[in-house]
Structure formats: C-alpha cells, structure tokens
Length: 211
Image (cartoon, rainbow, N blue to C red; front, side, top):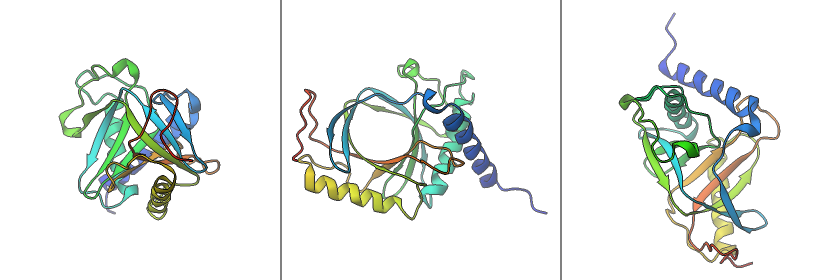
C-alpha cells in the first residue's frame, strides 16, 4: 500500500485547523477592523486601515481549492510555532485567497499586537508580510461553500455591481480575493465574501458612489 501523499497531510491539517479555530471559538476569533462607508443592494464598500497579513504565495497553484489548502497549511505551521521565536500566534479570520492571473496568495491577518514586529517565519515556509494602509475594499457576500465552480461567478457579479453603482475605479482588474469564515464541517449558514480593491473612498462619512 502506498504511503499518504504530502497533499493528504496538508488537506487534513487545513480541515482540522478550520474546525478548531473557526467553529469552536466562533466570534472570539480576531478579525481586522474596518469602517463601512457605503451599503448597496448587493455589495458594500469598506475602508481597512493599517493591517498586516502573513501571506503564503502558491506560484504553481492549479485551482483555488487546492491552492488554499496548500497555502493555509504553511500558515498553520507558522502560527503554531514554525517561526524564529517558536511563538504560537492566535488564529484570525477570515482566511483570504487572492487570485491573480499567475498565482494564488493565501493570507491570515496578524493580531494587532504583532503588526509592528511579527515573528519571522521559518525560511522554508516561504511566507511574506503584506502591509495594508487605507485600503478601499468592495465586498460581495455569498453563502454555501466557496468552490472553483462558483467563485468566478461571484466575482463577476461584484464587478458588474461596481460598474453600475460605484463612481470609483476597480484596481487590479485581473485579480480578486475570496474571504472564508467557516470550517469545512459547517454545513449550514456558511458565510463567504469576494473582495476587490477599488478607489473612490472618503474618510468623512460620505461615500463617492452613485445610488
């Protein structure tokens, strides 16, 4: 009998971590703070300020689902001590998967207590810190499982809504991000979002979108 592949162990670690951290702890999991500035019928605009993400690039990823598993497996090791300080970090939510033309990037936000100087990841994990400052993000919520056969449709729907109801411009038109909040074992009431970076945000409580 053949031994289980590395992909099998990565998949098992991914599902186990999601079950432990996103179901058992629920709302206790820390999430990045944001300011909502516009609420449309099927999308929302938020401002995220001063956030650090630990990002796992998956350069040769073949699909969204497989790349998310592979990238999160490395992040899971990092927050459980695979860093130069052997520090265990708190799980955060959501788990992001950014999809570009050539690569995938799986990300976890770092707790505010680590934003200035997060523990350095072990080199073999190939992780990198990504810092956000005043990011204007368009959000579309969707239910069920985020899968290869539905995420593109959700992203296209968000793009259409923005073209029709938002005066700002869409940045990085060839990329978008899927935010997942639930464990794989959570079968009902699932919550996901598709994110796109846009311009046209205001910091004074007035949005610049058209109604």
